[in-house]
Amino acid sequence: MSNESIQVMQRGAAAILVLGLLFVLLWTLRRRGVAQFSLNRAFGGGARRLSVVERLPLTSQHSLFLVETTDQLLLLGSSPSGINLIETVGRKGPSSSPSWPEGQAHLER
Image 1 (tube, helix red, strand yellow):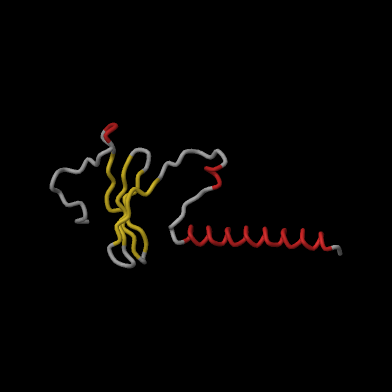
Image 2: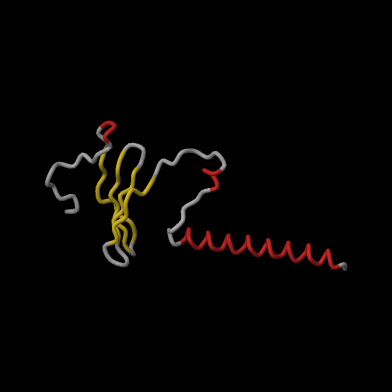
């Protein structure tokens, strides 16, 4: 083999190694919830119909999530045993503010 072909193979192997490390890094960040990406949306997929508006950690294993859909807000509680729906709030026109009565506690369930 000539010196030039060895250099081409080394550059190709280095490029594959860098792309592999980048894939592992992105996969790890996505599993931990730090990064979010979707190839479906990147290549012309549909608009997102579900999004996490806010997350409130209560303990190391318990959290509250405020999830927005196209027509309502969902308050979800997560624990090691699963995810529970706590409250569903419909939309009131374009203001998109919750329709909870004033002063009522909604975590009583």
